[in-house]
Image (cartoon, rainbow, N blue to C red; front, side, top):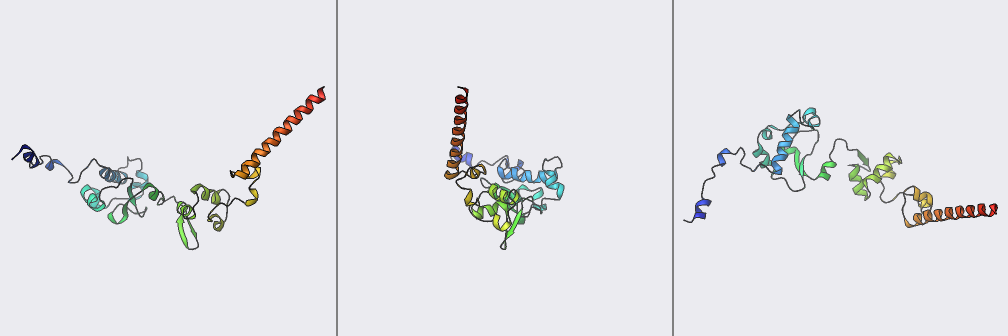
Length: 204
């Protein structure tokens, strides 16, 4: 038998010393450990939003990383642990691996809007309408548009504003409004030059 075969058949002397059969020092392990800390340690910075408001870890996961790994599997790239119902604790039925964008749509602070029988948070409506989150936020909270009008796809800038300096000042940067803005400044420069020239003639 070769040396390599002897090494491959050599028993793992450290196996009995390991606490968990699944590998630790991984993203999955740190997700499990962070989950526990948020719920059981009052010294954790986020404890008030988790353990402090009654969010707990199920008995199966609380002190058993291997059980957590068996239920959730290895943490995928770009995802973190997410609760489907943010008012319930950590357990197999309420947890998934989710992207940061998916988690952002599942916050307690989200504002949900209902229109034509459909209920979604603001960011979901923005995606559905094909507009930016900031655009929809301004429609509702700054311009105080009725919900039916705010939840409309496309630009809501009145057509009469295009091609005017007022439209440019309100934030429209289309080529017509830019041209009107530039023309305004040309007229102002011409007026200043004419005024300066008139002053020079009056002094002669």
